[in-house]
Amino acid sequence: MAAPPEHLRTRTAADLIRWLEREVGPRLRKETEAIAHGGTALTLLGIKDSTKDVDLAFRSREAFDGFASALGSLGFTRAADFRANPREVFHRLQNPASIVDVVDLRFPTWNNWRLSKAVLRKAVILPLSRVRLVRPDRDAVFLFKTYPLRETDIGDLRTILAVDPPDESRVLELFEDQDAIHRSELSVETAHEPLFNILELRVRFAASLHLLGPSRRRKIPRIARHARQRLADLQLRHSLPELIRILRTADLVSWDEVLSGDIEPLRARLAKEPARRAGPEGRQTDGRELRRRRSSP
Amino acid sequence: MKHEITLGLLSTATYGTHTTTELVRASGHSPTTVVRYLNELEDRGWMQRLPAERPGVGRPPILRLPTDAGLAYLREAELGWFRKVSGNGVRILWGPVRALAFWGVPFVGRPDIFADRPIEAGPFPVVVERSPVFYEDALEAEDGRFPALESLVAWAAKSGDPRHVGAAAILLRDPRLRVRRLVERSERMRTRNRVGFLAALSGRSLDFEPSPPNERMLDTTVPVEPETEALAGRWRVKNPISATLVKDMERLYGRSS
Image (tube, rainbow over the protein chains, first blue to last red):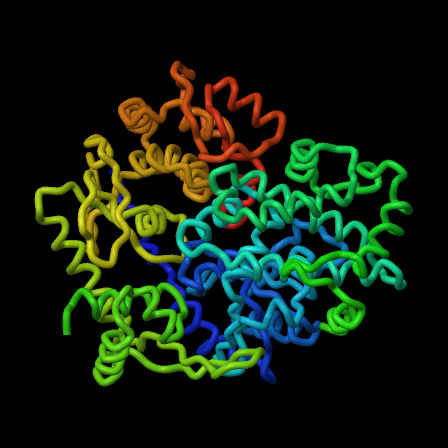
């Protein structure tokens, strides 16, 4: 048996920290916030190993461009964009010679997740030279993982449940925060369609909970119930398994087709919904709270 | 200082970023013990503090990170532990994280080990693989023993972990792979249909046919593309991995061929 040509060392969270502090940080012109996402966040939390790509999100275009430019000066080159999302800038940068060799950067959202004050409230910020690396908390990462519906993400949700189960109240609070942000945009002019964001959020949340299976759902009964209820509130014609099949197999979901003409009534209903809905903690969501949420970045 | 506690703390701090409170929780030791060990590790120059911040209210947390010297010590100590657990008549090889990195599909995470029975392995999570054939033709490297490529592919195909299954699909295109040995391993490790399905999915011809009984690939039923579903049906594989995930991993790791 021929031995491998080179020994590839396992990478660690410590490698990522050193790389950011010693290589990326000094090449940034100013302090730059980078928010760890996906498997990177799970690795930093010590919950699970992940694939080799480092996932980082940015809240400002300036931070995104500055970080990409710093990577450029380190010899990273841009790979082709392959996940088209008109509302999200996504660059994959690669440098095979670097200890961290694949970096995914997104702006201003990550899979439509808004990096609101509520999301970042329990995060920890690591000052690493000029990089301010934000490590979100487990509950935020759990919610983020309900979006993609890939086999790996369902596996990650199962691992979180097994290793360090989420705080149900906080996950629901974060879900409602995201839902409220999208609903607050229904009545204002936006470049994107907020209704589709609400559909993506609620359907994917319910779908992930469904794919976890009954024994896992029993560990988080409030989240499972809430996900079912929020989906039911949409009164869609398709069953959840049908929607899962559409979301899992289509590159870009055509919500127009899914809704088949029901867009305006649904929009009107959802736009009215916030003032009447009970929040996840059982309290009424009042107008003041909504204004506060809307003013969050 | 007890070696196990020292190693455990260094290991947790290396394979994650933890505050003092989180280290206490992860270690299972009392706060007094953990803080005493952390201070001692700091005195030895193996760990350092990083004052962090929180966007919300509350005291700023202190992160405990390994220094370069601490990392070097950990790597030596891990190797020592690996040799120690290998010497008790148990079949031991480096586990999926290091073995997949060794063969070209690196992951970010804590190293683990394969063992043919449940054992106490210090800082390493143990992946039990009882089949003796898995340990045949292992590769002896400077830093321990690694499974043969064919054994690793056959194991990964039945691991139930979608990332490892995806890694198997990538490794199936590796030109170093010995097809006859893979077929033999797959038969003896009862993962023939899963390997055949993955090979078909990644475009590698293995020249063997599906056979009963059915095999389950993932623990969860996740809908896949109609063509993949049909292919899995032909190979008698239940709960298959999707072609989309394999393509995603190929984009990330590149094809081995």
